[in-house]
Length: 296
Image 1 (cartoon, helix red, strand yellow):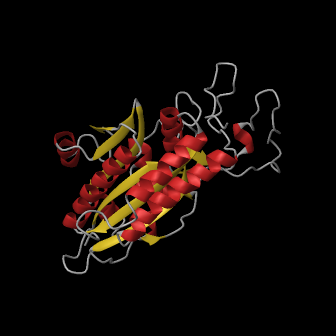
Image 2 (cartoon, helix red, strand yellow):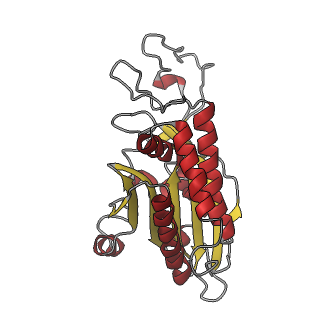
Image 3 (cartoon, helix red, strand yellow):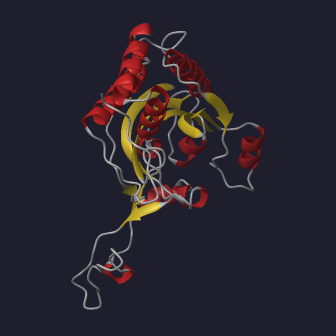
């Protein structure tokens, strides 16, 4: 009988980089195929984005101001320099003087790449894109599949009119709730407080009055979220609409895949039982556009 992954103990390394065996890999693919199919059924184009982004672009989107506690960057080595120090086996690190300037950022969410990919473009007012990408978050601690340094996130991103962005979240909020019910996975929806704007701005005040992010939690673990950014990314990335001229509004639905694995195996007790629950839920609600048909 296949069992769920054991809980980590203090003696186990907390690197935030756990591996997945065959059963976990199969369940992750099953979940990702499920979430991608939701987006495609709604009219989303499947795309592939780079895992790294220019740090200058992320800075332009206020990423390092809003999420400094999560930020991770990448820098090439420069070991040819005379003052460069070699790898230190004692610390397990290269020293700072061995690194070139860090010009690349490792984003904490997949959708940043989508907005940057569309920058300077005029888009249809009902644009939908779905992607899966590696995301990176520096955390105070790491815990199995619940809290990782690197993890995969499937997102379905809406770019276009205000009505389109809002309808996108309403439709997929209903779909997530129905899927969780079919999985016998009790979730609660809560407002989150992730910042998207300068804390002293008028937009920041609007965010406090009307939350821009809601999370779906299993126990204390957020496994999915629905997020509205109003026209913030449309403005910063100069994404415009054909009629109004822009800037475009954006919203996204996000699924932390490894976190879903953690929740499902905790709820159902094993990889096999969790996988069967997903297959039953998919069979009970065949892939179709969200309620009301494709978002337009």
